[in-house]
Image (cartoon, rainbow, N blue to C red; front, side, top):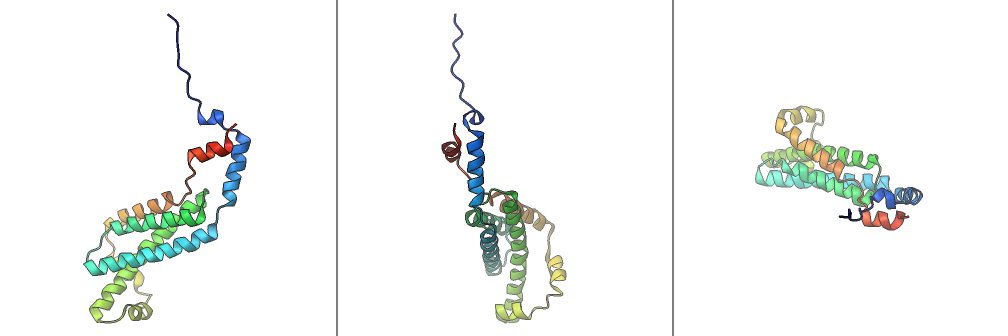
Amino acid sequence: MENQSSPQPQSAASILDEGKLYQYREMLRLEQNLPLALLAGAAAAIVGAVLWAVITVATNLQVGYMAVGLGFLVGYTVRFAGRGLDMVFGVLGAALALIGCFLGNLFTLVGFIANDEGLGYMQVFLGIDYGVVPEVMIATFSPIDLLFYGLATCAGYRYSFRQVPEAEILANAAK
């Protein structure tokens, strides 16, 4: 009996031209835009923080998943605006997501103070003594917040990178 083996599929590495792959990666890196990723990601963090505060104040419930949603929003915004492949885009997304979480809690505190005191939100925001903000943030911090801040930071990192489809890579770097 003859040994009839079926042809093995070629691995991606065996069908890629390393020189073309290098050139394609460099072309993609030239499309990266870190300043735009920073601006758009910061705007997304602020918008996400405002939404977080509005929902929390309106429902009178602190929903930890808002932090995760903020992380996704920031990450996807950094990805879309920055078109980044390099690690700096992930670090940027993670940092902005974490900052957005802190802003979400700050804006929530401002909302609760404004409602309790019968003041406008901007009036409270502009008149707040920012020297006591860290103390108030620590006093209202819960250990479960660490979990949600961590998840938001991970989402901000993970979703900040440009995704290049394998078909596109093969089309541009095949032998």
